[in-house]
Image 1 (cartoon, rainbow, N blue to C red):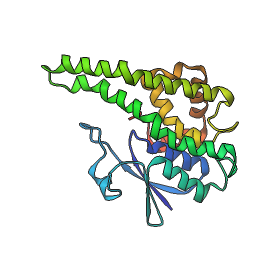
Image 2: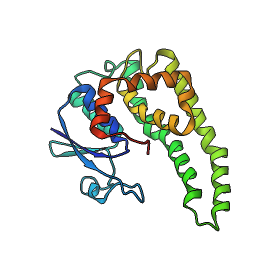
Image 3: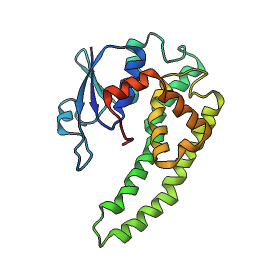
Image 4: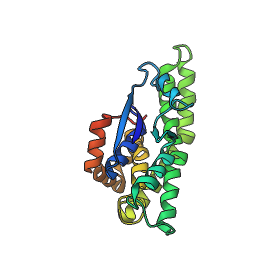
Length: 220
């Protein structure tokens, strides 16, 4: 039995969704963020040294990092579902998106979150300086980088509506979080192909079940 250590408002929502899509039996251990710092509670350190979510435990073995967790679940429980046939071009594309989602797509979105919040957190006397620095970082690097990625997603989705081949796959589950975060922070939802993708995934029964189990989330 898989135990998913699920943190509210976190990437572990995608793991819940994957498990629901595949119909894999699992149980959930719930954790709440510290309302002051929005960081994960220290109890997660007992599960994994980094104290972050998602983490799953199966047969005494612990798995962290969303892409690695998705790969493990597909290998052990997927039976070929939600991924292309091994050795194909599409299978290689799936591997790419599993890594890209966290390795390339999320960093600029997290940087935007940080720079947006810096002025509010700065002492009053320093706030004008911090605001100028944050604005320069956003305008000079973060916003152009986010736009570059959004253009890439929209062009990719315009081909078939999905990230790999012509069908829904685990790549779409992995990419859901960056696209939802970008739509929330950067206006990606205004792009036709991205908006259509988000509408399609939000109506999937397994996506809705995962939200009921994990709870509504913001894209932290």
